[in-house]
Length: 75
Image (cartoon, rainbow, N blue to C red; front, side, top):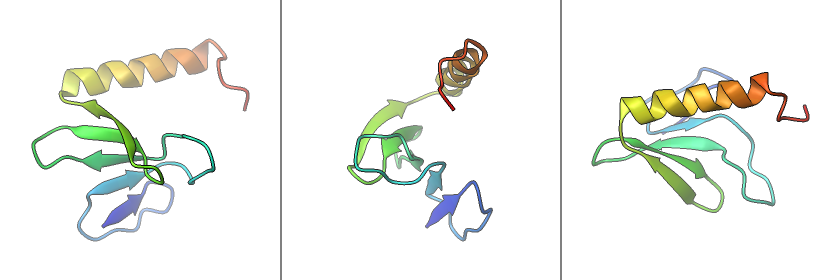
């Protein structure tokens, strides 16, 4: 079951969606892996980047926050 972080509706959660699908490779969700950890994925194309530890996840969050602070995003 997919959970859309923007709507807060779900049953058994295995996917956390945070963006809409597009025609290009765009990270749109986080998938729970059966062996532990998660994958940040373009759900439409199923391409992914694996994150195996809480420390890795925290550092990714810090990096994204720093990118926002530095004004790297156009929106």
